[in-house]
Image 1 (spheres, rainbow, N blue to C red):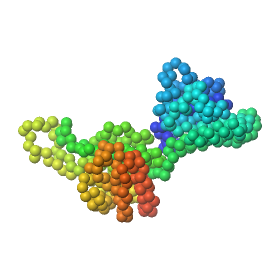
Image 2: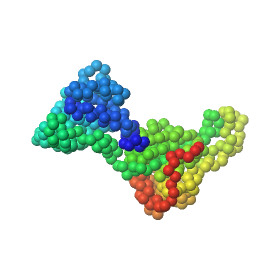
Image 3: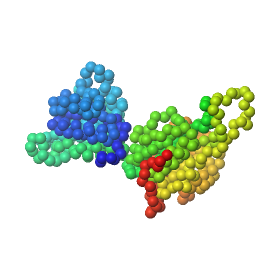
Image 4: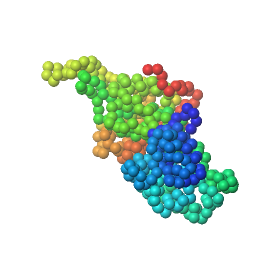
Length: 419
C-alpha cells in the first residue's frame, strides 16, 4: 500500500503463522505491512521459529501477545478461539516440515492444530533451501493442500541462504500482501469508486420522549455498504438509528432525523461516484416538537401538525455531475407503477422496487425479493434471497451505470464540503 492510500484490509482479523525458516526475519516486515494495511494480526510461532526471531519482536509490533505452545498456560483453547475469530490464516514462511504436517493432518503444536479447526481461508507461503521445493514429497503435499482449497504461493527463484541459486525464497512482501487482499476481497471491480449510502429509519421528534419513525432495520443498506467495501470501494454510510454493528472498513455517520440525514448526504455528495439511498426517510415531521413530554389527557389530536421533510434524493439529483443514483421504493400496493413514477420524478438511474408486505421479505427480514427498474426501461425480477446476496446484485447494476456516466462533466474531488 502506498503512503496515504486507503487501508484495504481495514478491520480484517488475521493470524500470521511463522515457522522455523531463516526467512522468519522477513515475517517482521510482513507483519508491519499487514498492520499498515489496516489488519489486526495475531502472531502464532512454532518453537523452531523462535530460534530465528524472538516472540518479543512480534509482540511489540503487533501490540498483541504471541502464541506458541499448544499447552502453554492461559492459552484458553486458542487452537479453537483464534481461528474462529480470524478472517484468514497466513503462514509465512512455511517450511517443508509444516507443509507435510498440514497435508497429513498432523497436529502436534498450536499452529498445525489450528489448521484442523479453521473454517477461514488458509494461505501458505513456503520458503526452503537446497532444491527441497521440487522434491516429489513436497510437490505431493502442496498438491494435496491446494486440492483442499489452501492457497499456496510459490516461492521465488534467487540466492538462497545456503549461497545456492534456486527456487525457495519467500515470495516478495508486496506480492504476499496482494494475495491476502485477493483472498479476502476477491472482487475488486469497485476499486477507486466512492460509494455514499444511507440506511435505516429516521426519527422525527414529537416531544422529548416520542417520535415518528418506521419499521426499517437498516439491514439492506448495511449489506450494500459491506459488499461495496469488499469489492474495493471507499464507503461512507449515513445511518439512522439501528441495532446493527458497523460494517468492517466502512465510515459510519450516525444521524437521527431526516434533516440531519439530508445535511450529511449533501455534504458528501460531490465526493461520491455512486449514491445508494436505502434509508427509509420519514416523509413528515411534527411542525413544532414539544419541549416537554405531552400528557395523554388534555391534548387534542389536532395539536400534532405535520410538515413534509426534505426529499433527499430529489435534492441530490439536482446537484449531480456524474454520480450514479440508486433509490429504493418500499411499497404496499401498485409496486411497479409507484416505483416507475419515483424513478422518473427523482431523476434516478436505478430504483429497487420492494413490496414490504411480502411474507419473509422487507423490513426486518434477512431476505428480500425485489424488482430492479433502470432508467433505460430495463426491469429485472430478483427472487427471494439474502440481503447480502441482493447487495451484490444491486452493485452489479450500479457498476454497469458507472460505465455510462457522461464524459467531460466535472466531478468535484473533495471528500466533504463544509457543513
